[in-house]
Length: 198
Length: 417
Image 1 (cartoon, rainbow over the protein chains, first blue to last red):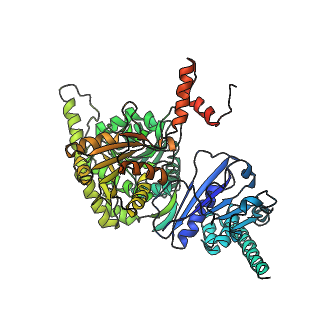
Image 2: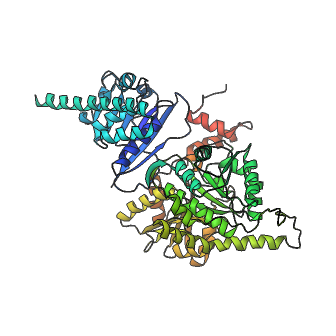
Image 3: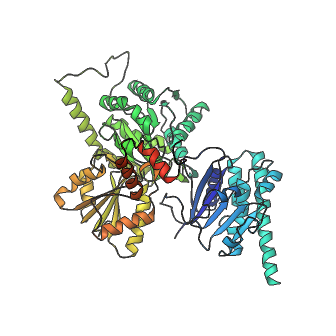
């Protein structure tokens, strides 16, 4: 079986590598095999950073970078004008962008037209993080949205991974943010289903 | 206990479980996380008694390790790349003196041009140093090899290098089965040194030896290292009995029973190799893989046996011997010479270039079709090379190759500053 492959784009200092690690821990806690690793050599604040996560039901042998992701998380939308973040995204893939704007407002209306709309979301992760975490760091928060969008990991596993990684106060604030970002996407999905039913 | 942790962390935990008494290290990417984690374990008292010595260089790291080991302390260090090269004089002393130091090499390219990414140039440069060299395929194996390495080193009184791919393994977070202290204590007996600096029974370790006995001392080093060909499989099976999994050993075969084409590789790239073998097998190709776990001593008989069915052998190497080509290939050729097999060398992944399934598949299809040249460079940008050769031909003062190539790629601002 092919692993589910996730690529996360952001900038140094935004916790991109930690996000991939948290996702792998969440999958591990659900009894699955997972592998997280960063792209290397760009560990500078503000520089574009990429991290990867593979999730599978069988041991993962390959360690090559992910070129054809099943899901993309874009933690910093300013990267969209700087790096080819969408490169290799499968047509049945998931796309999660940290932004309070719609895909159309981001100038991506035409681009996303060929993807399944139920698998695409923009989420105001930074705003949610500012309110819940107290800092504009949306890495863990966005994993809540990822759980809602893909169903690959549960929100409870994401919460457990966050608690394993951070000290208790910071962990609880991140968990609150992740849950809110989870609800933001799952409520949105329900609205979309009911809109289609109408 | 199963844990989802970084490879470096797993290695640090394994080393700590082996109860080293002295750790001397100087940080260098991509080894840093390993020694950082160990220094924390020492500082917190989790790893005790143990002295962690912050040295001023890699040369000092190995020199301190030699001194510590000579006093009978279980000793560990770790390095990579330029750091390994900087300690070379002491590396030869450690093996020449027969001191059972265990060292992790977090494999990384050697400069110039400076490059922090993974390949095997660093440890391959030390293949004749007298150290045992083992290469980990996964982080689980990296952890397991460290526990085995202390037992092997101390049994033979020889130093052991455990090589693991820098970044690719050291920085990958994966599921690891972490053994308990009781399990490791039962597997790894206390260090019983063959020689020790002891004021009550004085000896000199490192006496000058002239032509009358130098060859004999060297020959004994060779004999001792060749004994590892028996000790390593023994330790690997003892490990399987204690810990319930296969790790270490000399060579490991994958789908080779009926294979006419066999890929030989070392380290973490074996994962991608196996995935590619599966893909090609599903299309009906009789292909397999052999992983070299122990590179020094060279397990000639086991390699010959593992490759016996193959008409064609493809050696995938993450290092380049400039002026000839492959390094592992030479050893494979010598071992298989009587069998009239075709041996190809593919140089791949230098300086961290990813070795991907599609690229590997493409060259292996060429190999299966009998059109792969004897020496290939995987995904080499021939156009980029050609343009630099033209620049060199056009003017005498064509400037530094490295910068010219980066300008050509647009990686630095074009045109003179």
